[in-house]
Length: 99
Image (cartoon, rainbow, N blue to C red):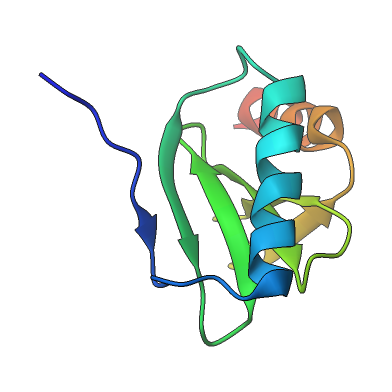
């Protein structure tokens, strides 16, 4: 079976979206082995491009700026943004230990 990587929400990325996606893929490449890609896309409401990983963490960039690692906190219903993936992973591990 052939696998395809589809970019959701955008058919022709503008300059900022293309730069943002390249930064997201660079960050993903530097964290290979962390998790598989669930989806790649553009959120038209927020302007963020993202790579969503199967572990629940997303790699995102707004207007081609610095990449942030984003995790959804199911307890508070808020998104947590960190610059370093290890910080999010350690936070999630601490939460699971507390449960």
